[in-house]
Length: 186
Image: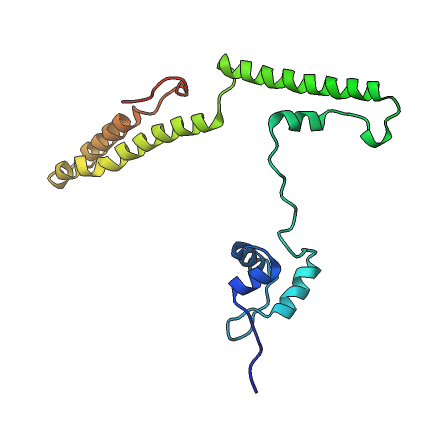
């Protein structure tokens, strides 16, 4: 008598139209049922999946990326276009929403030009460089001081030397956030 038919994680992900990571996450939540042979029991797992209220497919539909103007216009309160009583009033509402969106975009661009608004990716890159340099300097401490420690048995002197090296390495860390518009090279 053959054993139960099971499927692999990859096969079950294809059946459910989800990623393998989603199956792994579902397993961690106790949704996936396994046969003793190490394969997934699709029938029991489907029941558990449905019991948890998860749908087939990727779950929530993914939002399409919209350009900023369309997104701002979409948030403006406009009457339902299927019930237009006065086309000129509807057109005026649409035009006002469009102009408002354009004005908000212009304000964002102006704030960015004045350096009141900074791209988060630039900030991330600048801080990554600062922290990378700090990490490299701290990791270099053992190589610089190990020879001097081998011949020294005075704990106070060793402690002081380590404190001096750490302070020197931390001197690269800015007390104020780095200016994003300037280069941060050493």
